[in-house]
Length: 278
Length: 212
Image (cartoon, rainbow over all chains, first blue to last red):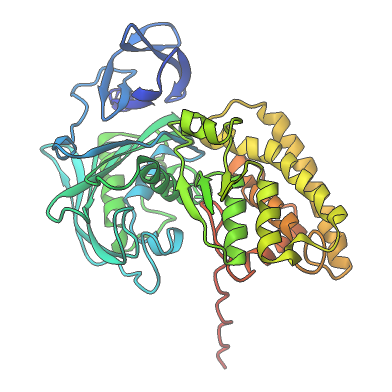
């Protein structure tokens, strides 16, 4: 495992779901994690303690030596938000494919029909994408899309505005128009734990302004959306995400994906990636 | 009628699908099965001591077995869905239970990380799919598209979800052409609703016109 891959923070569990010791995998290596005397811990296969961070309702660790703190999401810390633990879903796909799918808007009308999109409203209008060098993150802004039922709290179709942020190679944050509070953003994240290069545990998490919808409905909505993606993700070919242009032909709607791949390549993040041009 | 529901559960979907096909409106109450395990909460255990989902409440009646829910919905709204003879239907309702224990468990293992003997449950599921494939092929030779006749019954609705979701548990449906045609027939029944992992039937595009 190269330092470019090892030196990141990775989600390995949901804090509220960790009680005794449990085994899982990270980047193809066995690890154990648990909670003793109120303290979370993670150990590698040799029994060595790995660093831990508790943030966004999840436990994070790193098999390497991260040279910076785990990213923060200041918007998620404003008071009055409901923090929604969504659990995890296991998907047989590259962790990078899972992130890339989360960044894609064009599939909404076809995969999340009548929820996040609907025909004939299939056009993805031009939006802005940049790799922000000063923070080393990928951002897409001014993304707009027509959605029949954008969120559990949305009634009827609205044009939703989005911002996408990739603060770490296997994590993505979505900022989305908040129906009950115009001017604020709902925060929806996808934290991906790479079990292997072609298998991942996906931990969605949300910080929403929604005082009315029961928690179970919020979780159901998120799980429904993600499970609609799962069968698509498991059938994508090639299995690993190609970082070089070759067999896949991008369109204008794929600007975020292009920037994401370019950024991964530039930073040497190759876990779950197909590096050799096809 | 109130359905205590989990959106990813194949058994809950059976009831939502049956109600939709019959035009029955259900009041759906989402239960946080994963990750919160609210189906084992005190409130849910009072309603259903077995702690399983779905639970269907109709007035004073509380049903906890999905097969009984299908019977109840059909009996009250459209008895033709009960089939001509219960002898043709009941074995398939039992079979649906076996599918839930095999393909259903493989799916829970692969998606939500449930403990299971994954090799064994997949093997059981494949044996059952082969049995269903053989039966549906025989039915087609006799001019019947469904498990118990020319029209769909509760037997089809009971067996459909775990069959269609088999790929979620790592079991391919490619080897079963009769099953795939049967699934297509169910998806084309008016009123059909999808669930995550089971897509609605998209209209076939018209054939492209030939250029001269």
